[in-house]
Image (cartoon, rainbow, N blue to C red; front, side):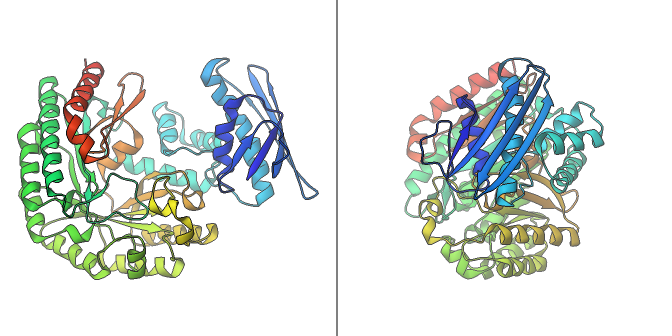
Length: 496
């Protein structure tokens, strides 16, 4: 879909308008000059008077006229912050006419970012009354009442679980990436390399990982910086052997400060085919009882289609095995909109989940991630339409409510089906602290291991800097010393 925007000349408008247009149409391009090839033309007139900005939009199509106007006082008169407010005014009228034209309501309004709840936290920290914060979100961003209410419930649970949420910036969390899986899922873009026949590469990787852990642990001890949470992700951290897991956790206790006081340690065991009694015994040995076992779907044909080689029965049996080995805080993931699945298949997944009742359930909406096999070969994967995807999300909301799960975090992604969201639900008191930390960006998270992303957050300004280790094991093995030094230099600047 090529859309010609008449009346705007500033190229900075192209990207934000394209993101909004992508909510309605696939593969949208925005042009500010008329080349005669556009499929839609929208006339946007902008009046920027410094202290007040006004915009109007007109869309003419098939003999119909769609109009919108919006006016808003702005608080910053120049620079990037001023343009941000101007952009929001233009986005308002652009979204409004597209909603009228397509008859599709975007429940998240003009928001296209990943972390909507950060907006609400900002208002809460500033002491803005709840009613006023709610009104601002609806008015400034066109978020529907339904989604604002979801955000409010999440903020309430986060502050109940982490009462010092706004003070944990003095601490850090640790993410440890293990880049190996039994196979690569069709929708996945995480660092995940098939582990079969790669034991030499695994051993080399673990040597580099141990080095990183030792150096970061040494820095934490010297600076007397506490760890809030540790999260082993990947890949699948339980893809390595029980002996390798044992050595890894033993090293964690040896080199990280005050491990017994860490609020939460999580190990993703997302692929049921990696779980064994020996590995579960290792987890218990090191007092780790929060894991993820991810069905994604309880329909066998779906698992085969997306490249997961475990069976539905294996998911159930490994869950029960984990319970027998003392895992008392298990998360399970379901994905809405997997190829070939509709409301009937998703209802079946919820029925099977009801037989297990994990402590937390994360409901993802399928996203066509840029480099995934599913995105590269879209024609092979038939997925549900917007209406059915939304019905499945409503089913998840109703199911969790009936079974007394509460929403405690959410995030959104580009190219997500139905412009919806991913929501983490849990039994009250079993919320993942790490998930709250990573989504609300309230503290520095140090990424260790292959493909691990660090997120450095300035404790005074809140400015965020990203730093990522190499994604492939070979490059990581060659450069882990260099990347460790760069991270420590950055940490020294933040915690000087």
